[in-house]
Each structure stands twice: as C-alpha cells, then as structure tokens.
Figure (cartoon, rainbow, N blue to C red):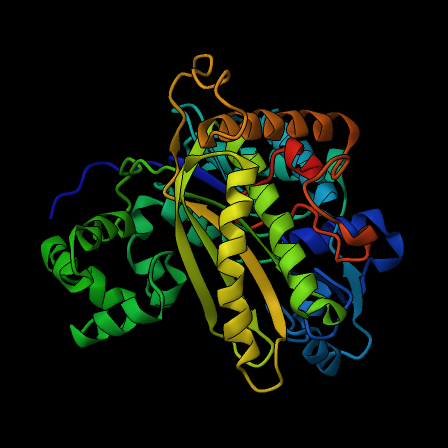
Length: 428
C-alpha cells in the first residue's frame, strides 16, 4: 500500500520519575537514594511514584508500601506534595515553551509538541530536544531529567519516549516503520489492555507485527471497529487528526488512613469530597444530573458503587442532600461484610455534566422563603459565596457541616496523571 510522506511531526517529552524527582530536587538529602512517594503515611497505601533508584529494586507506581520495604529495606517514604508538583509543572511548561510551543499537555509529566517544517529534519529535531532537556535541568532543577521521543505522529513519539529511560532520546523516522515497533508488546500501545489483548488474540493477532501485516480493514475488524483501522495507519506513521473529547465527570476520591475507616469519618470525608467536586463544577461552568458514591473495602480490591439522579444542578446543598440519601446504602453494604464497616477508599463523582446556559436573574427570588425553588436559588448563591471566601482566605475558611475539629484526614488536591489541577483547586 502506498502511504503519504511521513516526516517527523511530533516531539513527546516524558519527565522521569516526576514526583520522586521533584522531591529529590527539593530535598538534597534524598538524591541518589531510593525514594517512594505515598499519599498517606501508612504501609497499607501504595506508591504514587518511585525514584529511578527505587525502580532498580522493582518498586514502581502502585507498589504497596509494605512490599516496597521488603524489596528495599532502605527505601525512603516521603509524603506527596501535589501543590509543589503543579508549581514545577508550570515551570517546566514555561521552559519548554521557550524553545517550542506546546500543542498538548498530556499529563502532569508529559507534553507533546508539533514540529514545524523548519524543525522536522532529524538533526534539527534532535538538537531541539537537547536544548529542551538542558533548559529543564539548568533552569528548573538538575534532578528533573526527561526522555524524549520524536516521530511522525504523537502515538509513535510517545512510544519512542518510553524506550530509553531515564534521560533518553529515540527517533522513529519513516524508514523505521513499522518494523522498529515489532519488539514492543501490544500492551505498550495506549488503548490496548487485557481485554483488548485477548480479543486480538482470538482473531490471531498476538503481537504488533501480526497487526501491521494485515490490511488496514482487517486490522479494524480484529479490533472490533474503525479504531483498529486508525491504529494500523498510526503504527505505519500516518499523522491522523485527534478525535474531539469533552469532560463528562467531575469527582474526587480519598484513601482513608487506618484510624479513619469507620462510619462517621467516612461519611464526613464523602461530604467534603462532594463539596470539592461541586466547587469545581461551578468554576468550570457546568451542572450535573447524576451523583455517584463509590468505595473500596479493606478486604476487597473490587469497587462498590451506587448512584442517584440529580435535578440539573451545581448547588452544594442539593448535592449534599442527595449524598445523604446514598450513604445509608454504603453503610449497609459495608456493615454486612466480615469485620464490619472498614473502608479503604471513598469517592464522590458528579456525572452527566453539561454547560450551564447563559443565566439571568432568578425569577424565584421573591417566592415564599420555604418554596423549593426559592431554597435552591438561595443555596446556589450561598455556594458561590463560599467559593469566593475560600478562594480569598484558603481552603475550608468556610464549609458546610462539621470538619470534626480538623481531626479527619486532610483532603487536599490530588493529581491524577491525566489531569493537572488548576491553582484554584488547592483552595477548595
């Protein structure tokens, strides 16, 4: 099959062991030592990052702290400081943009940049990558090394960045494709998980070579739809446009410390997570039609969840009212388990979200104060006032309901690798 020209179009940068590297930058005593970053100070939690030195012992993201200590007794466990990681992220973004505009921020530690025609020769692209690497270590932090992939499309540039860590640089040119990929696993490709791997195997596709050897249409049939056709072209270096996406949920979860896994701490934690999600919803200009409560128990890795329909709302008081009707379901499910009510994680998600249409002054402001529409109008106005107070005076300057004297776990902003919090979230 004759394919179009496939020049180098993308540079993908992946920070090495990002959270742990930031901690080593901030704490010189940790440099050169195995470091694990954990969300809470408990051996029952898991690593959210491991330093380059810790990875040599088989410790990585998701390794239980207790297991990490078995693998490497000298490992140092340090608490996560998400606000600092966002600060360094912003500094790295600014440094990269001194050299090339960023096309997409893919996660807290990954960015993708589209190369212009005067940048996409191999020598020019490699020189650009070197300047970016040197700029980050020289101006942001010497511990913040990165691996860079350069390729005709973003998927291949991402795969190239993963091949040589730490501090690597790999280039896939048109003449390298697709045979340069044949030593990779199918699972190395974003979108191929355990289920898709089994599905491909049932159709006789057990590796990347077998997928690429098929005709595009046959690859799509093995995949189960047009995405397989799309993947075939990407693996051969064709630069396809991204498909549009939009946010569909806003939510937060929290791993409870061992002393706060009972009924009341879990309920109060869920309320605080709901308030945080509702505040984000208002700031984004969305309203939600579905509230989900989910949890994980100490003795079970599977998730429990329940949900309830909402009137289209962004009002904290409406969200809390409906959460109060969901929590008894969680209480009953958890209490019936061996050992009683013992949660490891609790989370709240607002779903079926939609933009709020242009608003006008409320028609219900002069109704009887006890009318449901009047209560909702007051509740939303009060919710927004609380947002402004917390933005100015700090998180929990004002809240709804008890904070239990601060004795609960601190619920700060956490970073999901695919989403970087805005600065305002650290005040919610």
